[in-house]
Image (tube, rainbow, N blue to C red):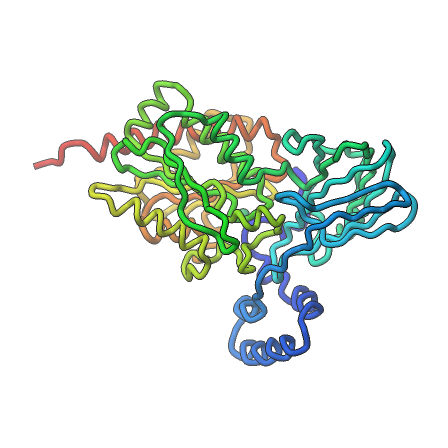
Length: 441
Ligand SMILES: [Zn+2]
């Protein structure tokens, strides 16, 4: 398994680890008066707080990249970032057919998830060298390419290399007259999800809705699988963190298993309503941000304060679902990506409903996939204001962060989610039967 930046990747850590580095970075971008204000605030904060809290004092809104074309007439080469999910902050020519792309995070401090995505084309077919320079982070995502923006392939390993300090990625690209997309992962936007719902998941028992709007005014889309079932609720969310595409793929494949025509699927759908918010952070995805929403905040650290409209909207929708008479929550899964496949769960001795759900579920998945190295941690981000923490605190239900490795084989994502979805359905059907047993007199 490919492992870099053990301290930077995935959930947590970044706010503490990157603190001093990020302070340096963010100062550079502040105007003098803002700088003065920050200094005063910080001086006060630093006296009484730990670095993690002091980081709040430098929180600032996400800075948008300029959307543009960079035309290099000498070489007949054009780059652009004018599409959803793109990220390039600057593009300059270094020499004949050689270019430098600067990639910066939306604000700081930020988890190191250095996302890049651009389009390039040429007047005539040629080979070019592109140096991707990461500012405020280091290389995380192996390059992929596409000629249509929807089907993606990894760039051959002999065509890219990462500098020893991981601050630079060099790409050798064959450019044609038609655009070539290059990106850290497959680009999955809200539009991709809409097409998927219309063409793949297409089922009459799916009701599309939304939970509200993002800071940027984008609809936070949602859907319900069978809202005619009794109000036994299962909640799935994904994409709080924009670059975590394997988590998004995990959610999509999971839903495909729940909506397949099978006796198990049918029995599950007759008993449960599944409420899904597949893209909690649509602005972050659209802007190609590394981690945050337009407020410059990590949404999966906002589940206590609920200071951001996106987290508030998802919470309010869940609360609203559960206001219905007889409504009962059973499970919440939040799909993410990190450097490995891992389940972040409650502590193993935590009291949860359905009783023993997580232990049994993971054991059954393991039995289905004996070759698979299953990782579980009940100690990750304990007490941090994540969706997992909130759902368990609020409802006592099993609440799980289902993490997929950045480089997990895409066909294995399908296999793992099929096994997980089927075993989840079996367990929840059993739990529902137990709930409905006649009570002893
Ligand atoms: Zn995440």
